[in-house]
Length: 248
Image (tube, rainbow, N blue to C red; front, side):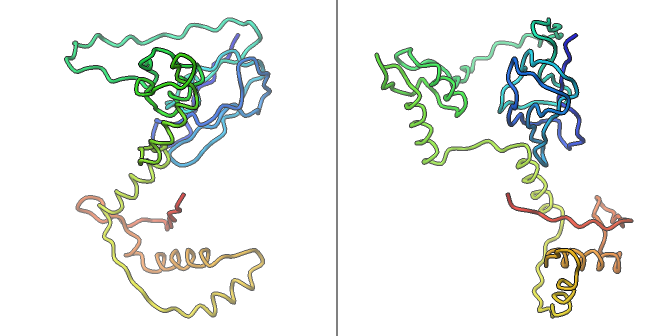
């Protein structure tokens, strides 16, 4: 019986994930532990391993798609094995809207001709084929036309969608600015003993490591600083956690 491989719940803070890359194709034989795809969460990129052996029967999503926890990603089984039908949720009919429907990125160009490669690249880069004049035979839009149009859009400052991880980073930083009072202190510090401790350490220790330890020791020594504002109350935390923001 074919096995359904779904998007796992990895404990991320959002159910909206990104299928970054496939490592397999339909027909490939996989073993237990083989990497199937890369899934980008709001914090990292994780490789999904296969927990069954068999052949890839069908891929249910494309690289670049937004996926959710529990969604079917692919089916693995024996060659020619039937895939069970999944229930399809039918949305209730919506009232007609007078607003015109948005144009699709793969809409036909004025001449009506576009090569398959051009249509694929247009979908990937969000280029409207209807706005392009083809340079191929009989005015056909070819791949180079789409590439040129996307290059022009990039040069003019086109918007690029944020990945789930970058959206989470932006949201956390904005929350920090809104809710935590910010102030800046500049002091001179004698680092002689710090450098001596680093040199004496058996393993490689960086200045950042020493600064994190100093902050943690200070918070443990002065618990009134190790607090979090929650509405009209101040929560004193039982443990010390030091977070470091890293630019990507």
